[in-house]
Length: 178
Image (cartoon, helix red, strand yellow):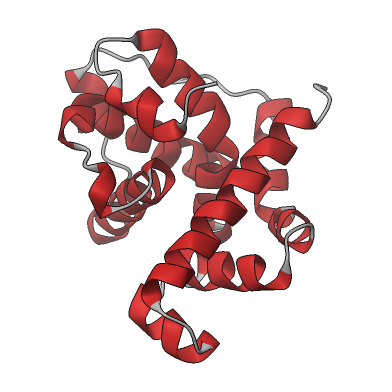
């Protein structure tokens, strides 16, 4: 099985990007819905996040961070832009010719659940990994700051975040489909 980074690096492979999307959407949606408190808005921001990622994935550099961190960085930028403009920009989706997604009530409920299930996802991790992910992904703290608070090096924090996110991805793949 290919890693997230390998999927992202397969620039001309639409199937690879689709797999990356399926693996990472719960994390990106949880991040966004926890910040905006609205599943529809979170879905719009997530769509724009993935469109922007698809359009710029050739610029991804794994030495600067994991594919998940890169996606969350894009999601954060889209969120900041939406707050600044008081609306979700759809420029990246239009540039790629992507139609808006039509979501039904079940889709919206699933997105809402990503935001509320975050703590249950983290509770299945070792405490050090859960703390690192909470601080980095949900509190948006810098690695150096987290390292000081956890009394370890920034590289240890990076490894905890990566291992924890890998474990979450693995656990989401094992959940039965609804």
